[in-house]
Length: 111
Length: 111
Image 1 (spheres, each protein chain N blue to C red):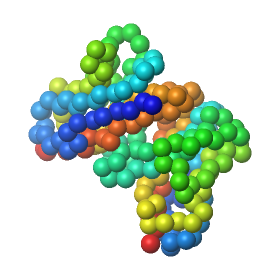
Image 2: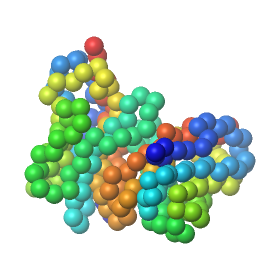
Image 3: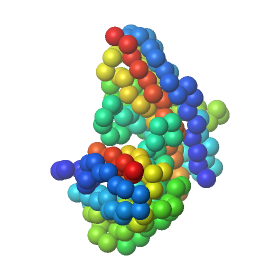
């Protein structure tokens, strides 16, 4: 099992560009999450999903959109990137609201 | 909404010293608590969790945590740290369809 994988691992964007981060899990988990991690701020939940076709807002959803068309995939989109979105993004999945399994992260820099 | 506060964000210790990290939570429902660890350059992984039963929970690598309901606390301890325990430690509480994470404790162990 690969667990939770994230694509890409690194990305540099210019302000105003768009991109999509892909998260995939092979554990048949219902719940999937997107977090951002910033120094001194801990992990902040952006969006999450409790099952295929569902999404919900977390603490810091502004500027991001998500989709969960397939159970194993959870996509995070930035429509118009801003420097404030420079961060490390982690995806996680879980069977229920229980132990979350995290991906390796995507380091995004917005210039 | 659930929340977690962690104290002493930066901790520097010598090898063989004892470690205790504080975690206080706020949540009105059934309490499920977690400690996660993030080693340098890696993703978060579960250290231990409490759902019910014995309030003293033992996790991996010699870590343990004690749930004290009257104090709304779930402090993490290790009697004798090693250099390899250098990491960031996050406390989390389960809430509605999600986990709420604290801001983390950066622990540096000096050989």
